[in-house]
Amino acid sequence: MYYELYIDVFFLENFMMDIFLLLLTGRLVRLHAGIGRVFLGAFAGAFLTCVILAAPDLMPWLKKILFHVFVNFVMLKICFQPEEKREILLSWLFLYFGGFLMGGVLYVLRPFARSLSLFLFLAVAAYLLVSRVWDLAVRLCGRGEYKCLVKVVKGEKTLHLKGMLDSGNRLTDPGTGKPVHIIGRKAARALAGEEAFAGGRVVVFHSVGKERGVMPLLELDQMEICTGAGRRRRVITIRRPVVAVCEQESVTDLCDIILNVNI
Image (tube, rainbow, N blue to C red; front, top):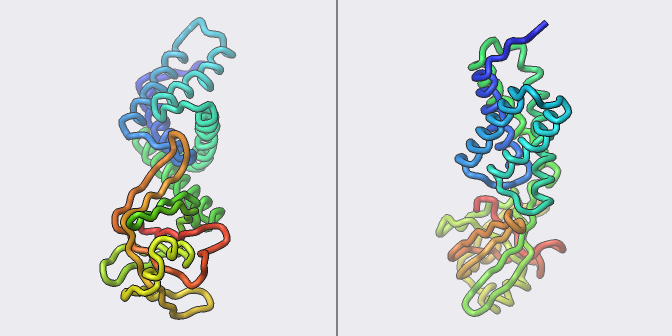
């Protein structure tokens, strides 16, 4: 028994699947890469896979090592350019985890693929399904809350606060339409003194146990939101942000400011 392999079809299938796997890996590990690097990494992976498969004198065990270590490392290096050992190992593990998830979906859908074009369509569907399920799982496990560091500035006063992005905070300044963040009275007092509580503008809110409440609004000069570390560090700068001052001295025991999800 022998199999006839069309190298062009094999390359195209590998190229497309590598694109989806790299996109999924970046989503799982939260590493960012431009679409050009994703395509380049996928092309390198598919090309090297074809070269190794076509090499006649390589031992089977050596081919497996090259497939699972060398090719995947080259793909990840080109796509995400990881520098730390932890990033390299994590991205390598999640590349296989993403492949396991997509492989399970494609195993179910593969009997319906009668042609290459239909298979690629099903691969897109598998990628979208796995991505949405993963986002939902992360959201449920984290309850829609994400921790970060926040620097707020008003005049000559600067504070470094522990922040939390809460999917439940969708408050909007009725006068400007800007997203409204929530800080405690202690932080507001340190930034603006009693002016923080004497402003004319307010925002109406609804919460559990309080059907209608009012919080005074305070406009700051600048806010910097920092997430991640190392290569994954991201800083979002917001000019003239609007914050609402809650009734408590601190918003919660775990954070000093609740960020608006609409940022």
